[in-house]
Length: 240
Image 1: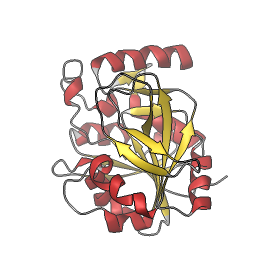
Image 2 (image 1 turned 90 degrees about the horizontal axis):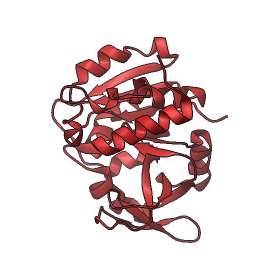
Image 3 (image 1 turned 90 degrees about the vertical axis):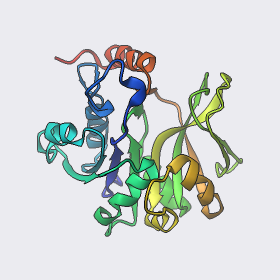
Image 4 (image 1 turned 45 degrees about the vertical axis):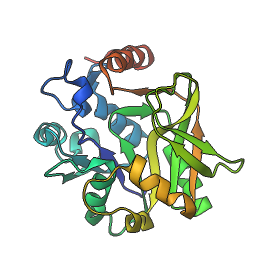
């Protein structure tokens, strides 16, 4: 059992592609299987022993903070790092640095995707490699909407490719990361993207892929939101 490290949940996105189905609700609170999507992530974390969470909020932050409070009702502890303006995924992580002063490493999860990951195993792997970042990756049949990665035989990532619109199969970034605290030296303040601005610059410091084979879903578009609802009901049953 590894836990004893904090988890950042990135839930501050504008969710522009979901406005047609969620005009006044943040993506994190999208109902999937009868529960807010991010609550499924919280349950996954809690069940694996990760109970110290930081929610990086921004758009409609009040709704999220009112819904989850300090996390007591869900059996976790939640702190908040709220953006006053959109900072991107990297900027949100940088803003939360003050809440991670005593952590040698930490986990980051996108708040709009779910991947069946052995998180403790991911942290163990990260620590064993003594690298700056470990990224959960998953093979998909259609990689057109995702950034893809290329790794060598030791799973060290050699290159990142941004979304190309190519509907071919590929290995994609699953939106779950473990970072060593030294990563903050490579994330400038302000609006920054982990995917386009930070990860490529980290390659020389050692970024590794960890292949996952379980379910992967997201709620990034109306079509995927409906698919996520169907999958979660099939997998977990409808909640009241």
